[in-house]
View: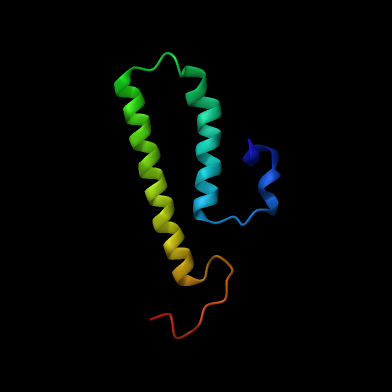
Length: 80
């Protein structure tokens, strides 16, 4: 669990990487221990939540890229 052990401190922390770390923690702590006990409907719901979180992270990453929040210099002519 990188996020708890601070092993990810050297990584490029952007919206997508942070979401992946959070999803890994949720998997290890909440989902994996119940893996055999979940119904098909619960498994499908967890899958849909995961896809939704990934879409949110992708949109946040696009915003970071557009605004230069990710630490990369932006060409002033690219921003409107």
